[in-house]
Image 1 (cartoon, one colour):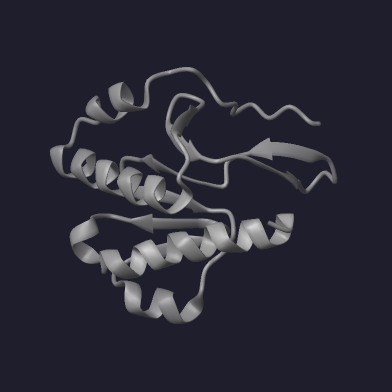
Image 2 (image 1 turned 90 degrees about the vertical axis):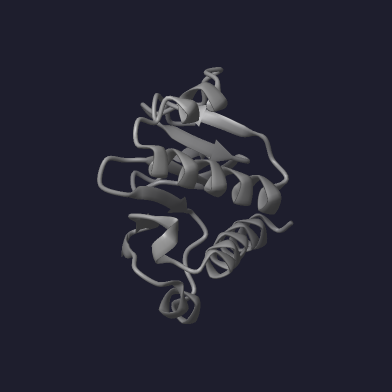
Length: 137
């Protein structure tokens, strides 16, 4: 397997989330972590210094090599909370989500107050389901 720079670590997820400076962003990240835990039934794990990932799977990267990664994750970036939906999106759900941006497998949300959280949870669940389907689970 190819080695990625970003690897799972033993760092504390709760310590990381509690250190998010902006109170609103910290609250949003804790809510996203709870959603992802509920959907994946997996323990949150730090990936590198700033990504919280749930579950694990291997996929073939652009180089053609298999790499280890998380099923779903997020990061509290300065401009927005970045959600890594490795299983893709559903356009109909995105239309109902509210204010967001997307790029590749990333979904950017400035605040959970700007989106429908039930719709966000459905997007997360669908992404996880798509990954499991690809893995034959």
